[in-house]
Image (tube, rainbow, N blue to C red; front, side, top):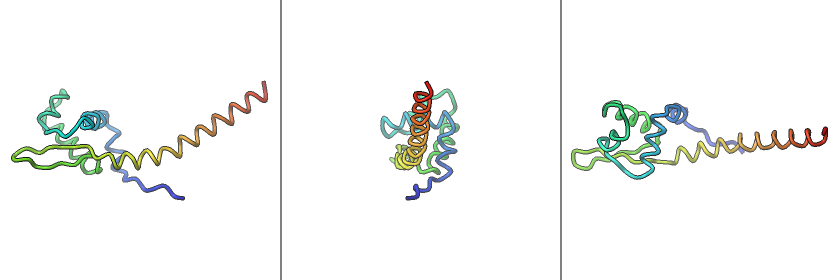
Length: 107
């Protein structure tokens, strides 16, 4: 069975440590950009740029509350990524088990 396709944008989005940290912070709940900016030493526009990249990858959703935009984590693309990575986890477990058997038989 083929694994589901993952948007390349997800890989690009999580490649940046700032964006990974944004996802961690948003894991605590929905927040406006002003509150998110307080977790970083960068400007609010820089945080907003990272949020736009995360939103384009489907990892962040936003909603307007009055004049404020609030952001929240959408973990679904990360679940797809986890399923995709599970194949490689099994691959390496099998390789390490084969190496263990080889070493034990030789020793």
